[in-house]
Image (cartoon, rainbow, N blue to C red; front, side):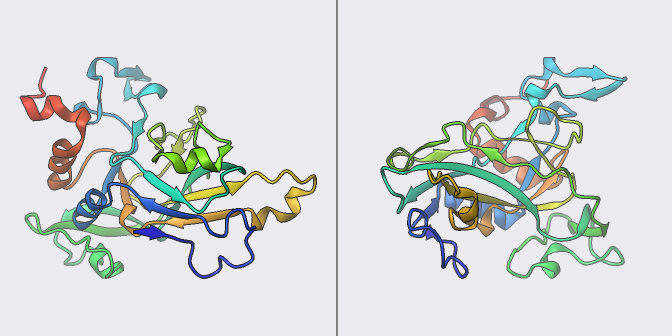
Length: 257
């Protein structure tokens, strides 16, 4: 369904106060969410590479070149309504940690700390595959540099944004703290919530005074995920192969070279 910002949306500029966003592929996101969505943040092995022959070596360690940083799947896509057709808007995304913990994929929960089903009852993330589950493994690592991803069509008129589905298919994730390509930097084995923001391009000279009024934010709980360097839950791997059009080679036969 359509999502609004909820409580606290009052006092917004009239150009954003009626904005609403609907998450596309919602049923697919929910299917992943029921299993506990995982997103790859680096490519260090065959399963994480879309072009295995392009893996480079850096200091003797497998290291993905910047062009191979991982795109999200499912892709974050929304349908917008309630914008001023004649006003200009910038669309962007950022990612916030869901808690202050880091995790590991392990056998059962005995002695290993609580699993995600205990930490977040609303998110059914305790998996039953041979008793494996995500377990809290200590305090979170220092936060990665905060970055935002601007949709490449920004700025554009409200009419353009509402005319078609808005896709963030160019957004890439990495865990390389030294990344200088503008990709979103996340810590592996940490949980994140993507956020989507609609920002009105205020033409007034003193627009900075009204910055807090000129945007509206949206969060969809079903898009929460664990950042990983390799998929941990085999059911996530299977679902990604089954539903990702770019994984056709894995569906059609043996991916081994």
